[in-house]
Length: 107
Image 1 (cartoon, rainbow, N blue to C red):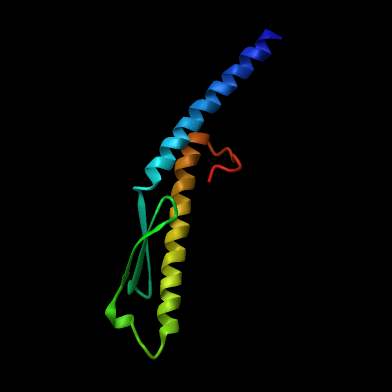
Image 2: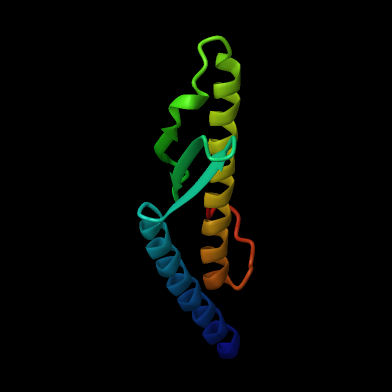
């Protein structure tokens, strides 16, 4: 019975260490930024590891008052792609800690 108890406390210690490492990753993600563009680079979005849009660049030549829908589509595409890249970046960093173990509620 003591082996099971010792084994359980070892698991708890490992889980606590993993939680600390994941906490450090979460803190670090605010400063890590990915970039994506659409329209051949006419719209570029930057999103941090917390999935926050931190910057957006729109080239003047893509702004057409006659076709605002085009600009809206380009912005949405760039932001969506940058957000996807950000989520992939976070998943990669968390997988380094968890060894690919899917832990619900982490991100």
